[in-house]
Length: 328
Ligand code: 13P
Ligand code: SF4
Image 1 (tube, rainbow, N blue to C red):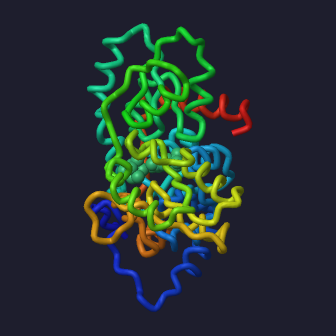
Image 2 (cartoon, rainbow, N blue to C red):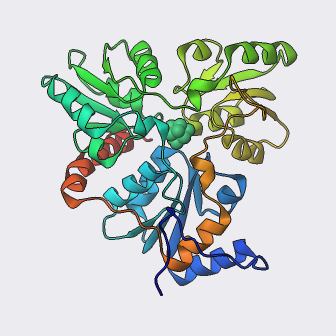
Image 3 (cartoon, rainbow, N blue to C red):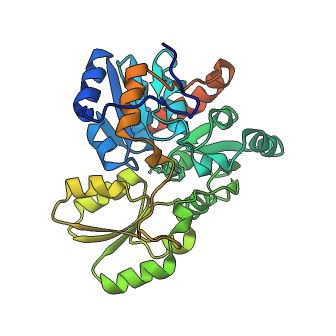
């Protein structure tokens, strides 16, 4: 039977009487599949996953799993990273339309031209990039390991960093480097409103402001703690503080509440929103129905051209090796 995936996901109606979590778990065991989810996924997607983590953890799990099928509940570049690391496995993403505005802000040809204009520079790329960008990269980083990896280069080594200008500026400030930056950004993290965060601080004077380094510098100046999603979660869990204003995609709050039922988490509001929280429209495209169909029909599948994959895998392995050496 041929299945229609022209919309980017399996377009087959799902019987409304099905208990989807039960059915998904059955299919998962039957097919020896593993479900990996990013912290920005919908709550129910996080709850069904075998592992929930940040971008680094997703890559690490994808590299070492024994499963035959990896279902990556996240965005396209996360599925690509898993496929690059585990080419012999089937890698599925419930909805291929789950892209990333940050990865889109760095077209591979333009980035390659930029790299070619600076031949004496080492290229450091954020994991939020396409496979083709990773193929012209020396080392990939995530927000968890970027500082450690940049610090591992000799002080006089010339570096290019792409594509996130906010993360790049933040990394330049904490490492003392002068990396050349690509001018890209994430539409979610660019949106946080300084005025509204200041208002919230007045309302909740005891609250700690937690911010992801993809936020604009002016937002980071308001933060009590800056870190990757995993670092923000760890900080909220280990500190004695009880209230937090969270300046990253609000999906992380699900896990924060699970670990800290006695603490209060307030999503930092974006500039223009009626909901008062900040959600990544791409991450939210994945649903239980699409996940069920994805496992049932083993579609849509992520593919990466072999020529690109063999170049890209080197920069990801380099990241994983340095991370392991530093216990990350
Ligand atoms: P981390 O998972 O590394 O914190 O990155 C956040 C993000 O924007 C993923 O798309
Ligand atoms: Fe990309 Fe931003 Fe969404 Fe992360 S939150 S997947 S960086 S668009």
